[in-house]
Length: 292
Image (cartoon, rainbow, N blue to C red; front, side, top):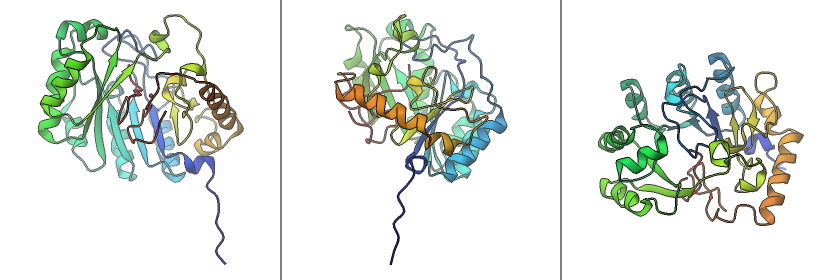
């Protein structure tokens, strides 16, 4: 007789955001975690992150996304991406594409690696007004380079105003050959909150279900949008699996679902922050983007 053992909540977590840093060359107005040039890499050491990757692979995580801030600015990010790939994990690097070193291009062409970025307008001035820096030319040039190299790419367009050239930006990307494009609205977190109180009503409702995030200080949260205010435990003192399957995660999931059941974020018609088509009510394969 075959005994069927139900998967634990930890084993059900197949995707993990590695939220490496709050440092970024840009200072985007809607940034969900207020990253910028003055940001730091937090308290997580290289050893801490490598341990998280090992534990993630052991408890059933299949894919990770390096995000920030600008993850490529973290001194250990390339080594962490290499380690994740070596563990058999799929790795997506969510970068602003302002500067991509040769080592990153080599890694991004490996099996299991992919790239994601944000784009705001086909007009440089409008794009740069969002990022706070003259970044448009570099981002666009590196989008084109990724396409030339055959690096799997998805691009999220975040609409920050009602007059933003979102349609034109999408048309430009499609003409270049970008296949995976999504459109999202500004999330009410970080600078995007404009001073309002942070709560679960701005989340899509699927947070913590099959996914979780680890912050630069080691705090685990249901998603990157809640990393700075909805901590469930810390990987520097508690094993990842214990946090993912613990009561704090279950309570957070219940609280988020209760708000979603009452309507939650009514604009989240297709939230898929992971890009796998599975996170569905809100950046890719639908429209929820865990970026800025």
